[in-house]
Amino acid sequence: MRKQPSKAKPAKLTGFNVLPHVNHSDNTAWPVMATIYVPSDPSRGCVWQCNKPVRRLTDLAELDLVVLQIVPTTSDEIMSIKRNTMPLEELDTTGKVQFKALIVADIKSFPELSFLGTDFTTVTISNTSVSSEGYHQFLGGCLNSKNLLNLRLARLTVSPTIREAICRRFAESDLASLKMMEVKDSKGFYQMCPLLMKDTIEKWVESENPILKAVDVPTEGKVELRGKTIWNLPHNIRARMLVCNDLPKRSQKASWQFTFNAEERKKF
Image (cartoon, rainbow, N blue to C red; front, side, top):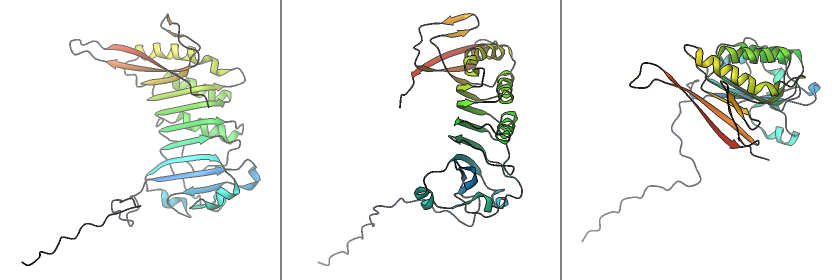
């Protein structure tokens, strides 16, 4: 009896990620993420890194610019093995580009970034102590942008101008989310967080179409809302308040729900 040829078994792939085919001729195939490394010594110059290697900033203008990070440089050994890097001063910054999200963390000086737009939808700034006029002008432009939806600030010292901009965004109630922790100026602005929350919540309730959905602030064991104080909250928590405007099915009048979720702060 003639033996039937056995069917070949499919090759087994090991050690590789099987990725979908991407047409590399399509410039919009990959979202663009960039990083600016800022040295502690300003005389050394910043480093530009981008997953889309370019020499001219205008080559990024029509792409999906997702996120820009501004962070400190690491050791020379680590910087030397990073891919797609170049001195920022060698990048042709003619024109202006706009990223969707901005992350600034742990820097002590701020480079000149006139080629960057300030209309971010998400801004996250933490552990940054910069007193230069250029930095506060840039941050002020971000806070004043009507495109801004999500704002996260942590462990910052801000100028009076930035403090006023933050208060104004509280009052306008046009953010989708806001997280603020240990934001202070020479007068201890961070101590005003509970008062700002109380005042802003009342304005949300009275406004016709409030947008803000969530606020994260540190607590001091209590939260006050419209004359009612909620006590016995642990001191070492971060309270997340969800503000929800629900329209009951059987009622034409909207009702407001306030939910406080508290979690312990992680200690590192």
